[in-house]
Image 1 (cartoon, rainbow, N blue to C red):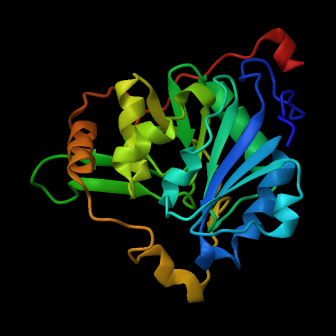
Image 2 (tube, helix red, strand yellow):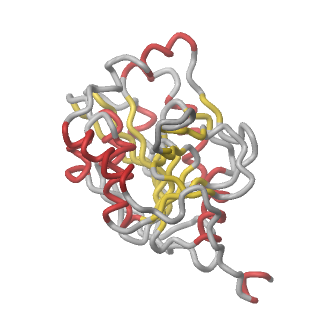
Length: 264
């Protein structure tokens, strides 16, 4: 399979200039729904990487598509499969889930919104969590779902990795993520925190992104198929994320000012 080295996806000045790629992991129980994601996302990117967990054969039409890199594994890598293939540092990487309904303008709108904030030192997504300490009501983790409306970008401690967009150099390797097996959100948040990057939820309309889980597959999202008991690295990582003195939590970012060339 020939490597894609030149992008066909337009983006304005200030965005990374590498290829635009999407990374997804799926498994046999999702065979009936993962194609919706391929159909929605593939037309918007240069390349798509799909890891087929616990499968020994790639569907023929997927294998025949030269813009899809399909990988089979007899192990269940869970969501860490998204990190199996390393991107180039200046690529734009979308981490996608097999059970989310992505709109037809998901990629260009996300690139535009991220570019207004700036790619250096930042990672982006749509679902996120913040932690509020103390003994009063309303303390603990507070989640903002990807389907909820958000009028402006907001800083968070942790992003949901099914709706992340980041520059290639902010996407951890599979080996770096391995200690957080079954808890990819924790690993992604922790490794980018340690690298000095800030996490931002991007603005969107209500239900611009939607949950695509079907009732008959609902059990696969809450069973041991996807979740594992937190290991010591995961528990320690959560503590480090909570304790980090971050100055952007709940705040709106400073956005880039368009140049005269960009404004025309």
